[in-house]
Length: 135
Image 1 (spheres, rainbow, N blue to C red):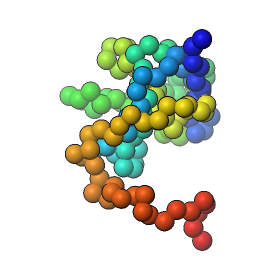
Image 2: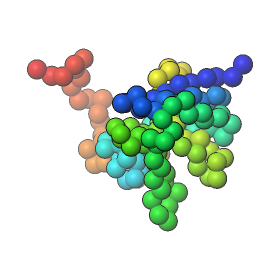
Image 3: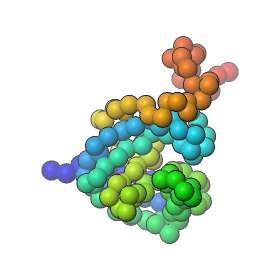
Image 4: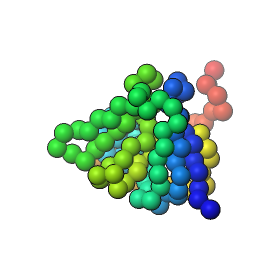
């Protein structure tokens, strides 16, 4: 039996389905992923066997490739949410973990490109935690 995962963008104009399993899950700290996410890292799932099917809104998906690099990002043109894309001539499916609506049991395999890690991205487990916005 194959795994089926569903996802969408924040404005709900784009819905997709992934049929198959993920082989790896990386938290990438490269400078490109910091810019993509606006945060310390991206969180992406990778598969060489799963199939991507756009349910609605494929026309709202824009893909950007930084020239002279292998860095690719797909996103909704309405809300900017990160969305899946195919890389390496369609051989690699990359899915932003936060775009999934279905739960996954896979935990990240590793942090990658840590040499580019943001200088403030250290000892974050010691920072105060709140269940909601602090008052």
